[in-house]
Length: 283
Image (spheres, rainbow, N blue to C red):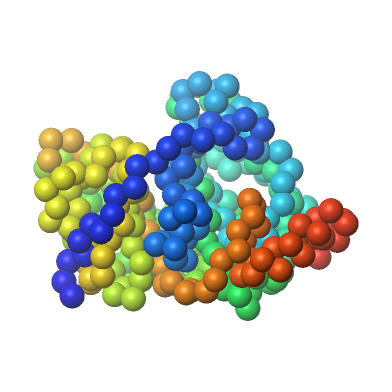
């Protein structure tokens, strides 16, 4: 099977979410069938606090897991399980919404550029109504390893004996934050059965022997294969390299809730209106 080729390049687009937060959405429901088991990837943050300070007040989720990774900045959070705290630079919030959770995420003003990412991971049908859980992960828990000329922070998965702190997802996945200096290269073995994508959040890089670079703000989807190769030219690149085992299950999606059938989705919103959405309350 060899090296994976770039099968599609997606350029992110700006959108408004929450109480008026300006987001850069890399992919969502229109592309989710190509990225199974991943549903959505947002990049958020700005030099201008007015772009993000309104935050994401109390809102529900069901049927998914979210992985929020702050590169720089602070986000206060709280949820219906009683969890609360602050996600700081280099830290991760990993939440399994399961049967239902209501939470809020409120970015705080920072003098430097605020930047972070949120990835939605689908839950398999048998786990859609599992007990919701939350875990906060510190920057010290995220270890680094070398892949060729690159330095990789291992968020999820195991690389060169380094295991990422996000290790209880209901799907098999790997999540790497990679820095590759200018004029360097790397090759990384991937599970042949996984769907794989890369999001370049700084600089540009050539993937899979392609001649056209994938630039900042773009996502590269890869074809089948056994490895991903990357080369930089005159400038360094920073990118997320994420892969996961597809669920191949139907998706019924309504805003913050993702189920398998339209009936399940309608029932979830009915419970939200009736006040019976939350199955597990504060500790």
